Length: 143
Image (cartoon, rainbow, N blue to C red; front, side, top):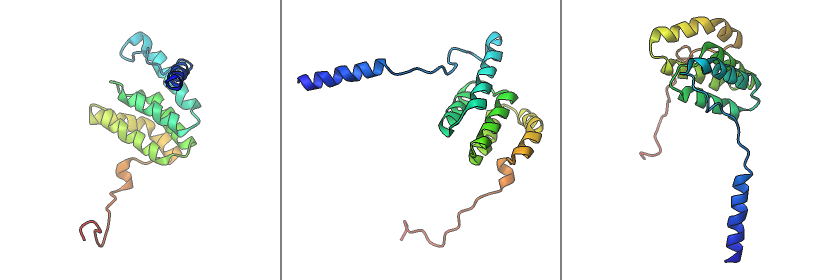
């Protein structure tokens, strides 16, 4: 009984010592006065990210918001993905942007603006990669 109480107390003290990070949750991109600060925060995040987990966490955050990410943020995210040598993530950024853009014209404007960077980084759109069909002679699950 005493050992259990001691463990509970140590777990509680551990939770109090957990460091908290600033993820710009207080900033609202819909608020025009905070929009520039929000964009600057995520540009800085992607410019300084040094591991895949932080890159993908940032991408999850910006694509979960109710707005289409600004071109500057997408540029920094693409540069970070290539700097970290995650080609698939770079292609997925474009795929997420295509899903997030409310109109096809808006996505095409992004691609036109980003095309020099995409060419420089060697990042194609998903449709340029072609279809991937799985060829299997037999299905072991059906035998």
